[in-house]
Length: 477
Image (cartoon, rainbow, N blue to C red; front, top):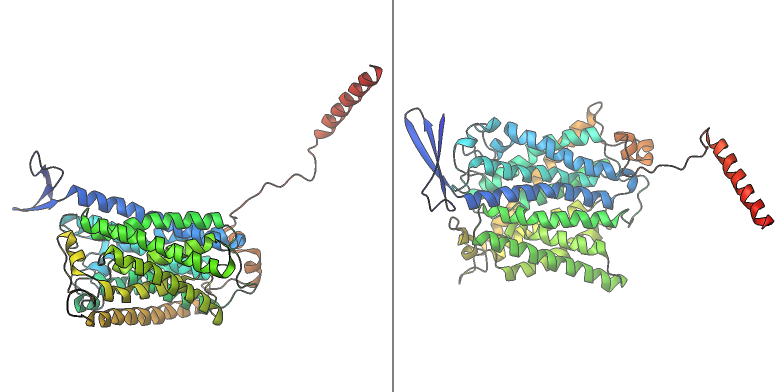
């Protein structure tokens, strides 16, 4: 293949670049927009930053003896899933040759991906779309492992990331965004991952936590060991979300700006709502409540951020905080030890946002990218289009059922295989996952020596003699 790169013209270089690919005797030209490509590249890097953001959030919320393992596993998720995405994950998720349930292997090893424009936006290359979506796939298993805190074994968790991405995430991702996926064809709406990222991870986390059973020394309402890390993680997640949601517009356009605006408003309203609700109860301005509220607002607006007016994002932030906070409180009534509230925040937030999207979605906002159009939600137009809510509920139900049964099957089989037991033993749990499974600790302190070095005796003698001499001189004076 011969590649010929040239600018469309001397004065139009900011707007487009034409790439000519010569195959045999046929020359095919694709025109890409540098602005759209640049925004998508930046958004990719911003989404990557969310992975350590989740790690720091989980690390701060857990007890110190098992904090490092959670941070490390989040980075493991990026590595494991990125390889899976290259091998066949992207092909299963976005192939245009699949059926209604799952894609084909025609794009395995990214074959042909670098040679054509993206179907999501022909103004950017498909390889860029692939990298961007790979970050979504990478962060999702990192969300799930929060439920394994302080009792999940390291090796089975890593294997689970690979299997879960293949059998759960890739399937639901294809339903929602694949060109032949049943939910996409039905007309279901999900702008940036309410179903494949948040609802699927939250439900799967609850299944994982249920199979692991409760921590032996679990203390209900235990305080996070490091609030500063929680705030740091929340900050990285909040920042990264501008690329997570905003980048899903697949270009530097007005729709992307609306998405970023919606994302920030929902996060702010969620943070204030949760914090004030806890203040009304405890008379304290809790940093943890503020962070949880911000994340609940971010999660809830995810599926709708590219379909709604900024005014509607006020409702998403408020209802997201109220709904997720109620789910956290209800968790105390069940025996599932979801250590870091993954189901309450991501599962409930993702599902709630998906349903609300069917109410508030508007075609006028969708069309601001110059490429997309939807029939609209319940409140769009003169006639109430209530059927969109039915589509949204169908997606939530299917994603929940699939995530529950497939996650249970993966973990049940793994737990029966020697060497892949999911839970650590009592001794390891008591000593801490970090030291027992990793041989490291989040915080290593240098102890004060209990015995003086061998040469210190002479030093102490010389110091004592000097002090005695000074004392004698003082007395003589």
